[in-house]
Amino acid sequence: VTGGGSHIVRGRAWVFGDAVNTDVMAPGLYFKAPFEELARHCLEAVNPDFASQVRPGDIVVAGRNFGVGSAREQAAMALRHLGVGAVLAASFGRIFYRNALNFGLPALFFPAAGEIAAGDSLEVDVVAGRIRNTTSGREWTVNGLPPHLMDMVAAGGLMPWLKRRLATGGIGAGT
Amino acid sequence: MPVGATLTEKILARAAGLPAVRPGEVVTCRVDLALLLDSGGPRRIWPRLQELGVGVWDPDRIVLCTDHFTPAVDPESAAILKLTRDFAAHFGIRRFFDMRGIGHVVLAEQGFLAPGMFACGGDSHSSMGGAFGCYMAGFGAIEMTGIVVTGEIWLQVPETIRAHWRGQFAPGVVAKDIMLFLCRDLGMENAFRVIEFGGETVARMPMPERMVLTNMAAELGAETGIVAADETTLAALRAAGRSPAADALDWRGDADATYLASHDYDAAALAPQVAAPHSPANSGAVTDFSGEHIDQAYIGACVGAKLSDLRMAAEVLRGRRVASGTRLLVAPASTRAMAEAAADGTLATLTAAGAYLLPTGCGACAALGAGILAEDETCISSTNRNFQGRMGANSARVYLGSPYTVAASAVAGRIADPREFLA
Image 1 (cartoon, chains in turn yellow, green):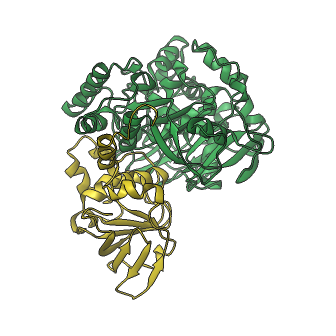
Image 2 (spheres, rainbow over the protein chains, first blue to last red):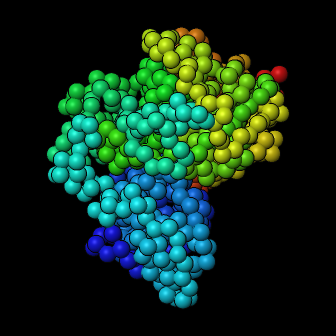
Image 3 (cartoon, chains in turn green, brown):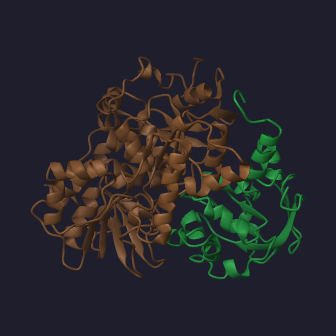
């Protein structure tokens, strides 16, 4: 489902608390700057090392209401741009959740997020909803991606999915 | 209509072309109106339309406003605004409002929303439109791109929570205080839920105050907020030159509809509320925070700088002065609010008290325009959100309050109880 067509994501955990908002993921001060610069400030107010040290495939693990706040899609885009492979949170802000999936960034509801430690190695099957902590050996099963969005996330997000629908005549009057 | 539907369920069923819908069901809705702003609008959507090789599904269902980057202050904001104007011309968008005010407020002024409508906006505070008895929710620009291409969007039908208010406010207490209280009481985690506001207190509120309730449904984390239409709604639409449909008042929940929860609150018992840094949920009675020094007081944003808000501030500031060591910045929410406040003397009262008048637009609320905060500064603001870094420096501290409370604090130079100034 993710980038390379696999639905398994492997990476280190970056752990955040509750109610991390989109203003700190995409600060308004950098809205007019090139996107790469905005992404360098992603989450700096809560973890100044995140943007410079996150590696492709790493997994963001957060508490409740991750992405609360603004509709700014740059929040989900910045995580994607920095290479985050998936977001696991106890719950999500509604627009952030939708934006993440629309950019092909898998977002799973993970009630046991608090049991993950920073730096743990995780392996996540985003379709089956299987989460393995290879550092601690623990394993959880949660809801995978919503069935009605599986095709869209599998296509890499809304843009590739719209392209496919347009190419197959799936968009037009009466659809 | 099937038995036992909430207002939201009725609107979503109609928009999805289904006889009925139930919470949890995933439906695809046809969009009656799409609000695009200069922030997440053309600048983000147009390149995607070009990549897809398509135009917009229906230019007459789009309303486009410039508000986040107005007025242009540097080459980047100038380019964003020019691109927005070019988009309107290129796609023939007739309902284009350039530098006329914050989109959510312009929609109301123009009477574009009507009971039963299904509308989407590219900004989280699009929920404000729900004050007109329609379902209007905010989405990211990527999803607005999908709407602009297809005219439709998927939703998981939300549960409805009823928040009913009875009784009369004490002097100095307004809709903003309700919302700061609810951010604490209902929390900010209400995804897959709609908050329906009602009760006699809400029934007595004029539209600008109802719009505060639905605007800050975004802070509650809800899908949106909604107020069933009544004569006040219809009068506002008529005043905007619209003719409400004959069945407009039929858009309301059934008596036997199912609600996730129903809360009854006493407006008479509510004190002015203030939310402390860095969350709208860190709220309490203003007296809990009295005495905190204020560097900047800000009257601005869709939620807090409508004509009625400017008048609240003027009521406190009449014959008084902003404290030395404190600055009061006022950015009216629309050019109409600015003009009306100029005509009725409100602006003169504000400026005589020492207020510094800023252009109309989203401005400092989201650190995009004039009035941003320096490191370690403290602000009290009539806006809706006080997350860390929201209005500027990460170390800045933002308190939220009603226009009454912000104005009272500007006079005192510290967080102050507006009731002391309105007696």
